[in-house]
Image (cartoon, rainbow, N blue to C red; front, side, top):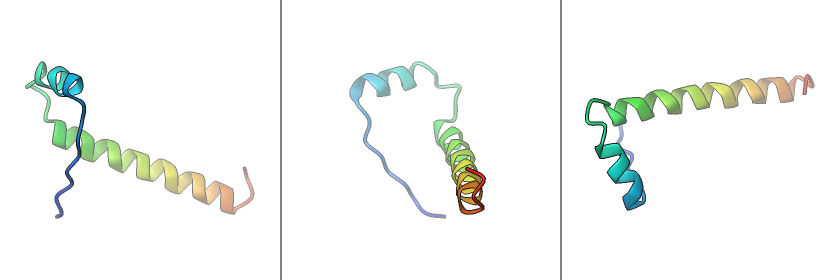
Length: 51
């Protein structure tokens, strides 16, 4: 597995810190997976001429 580092604004970090019950790394991994599936489906539809 690789490491992915991002920079976020201070105000966003403060909001994230208000919710320590959320595993933000796991949340982001899942969101990335969802978005990649969406993009793959879009590419399939585009390449098949359906959109």
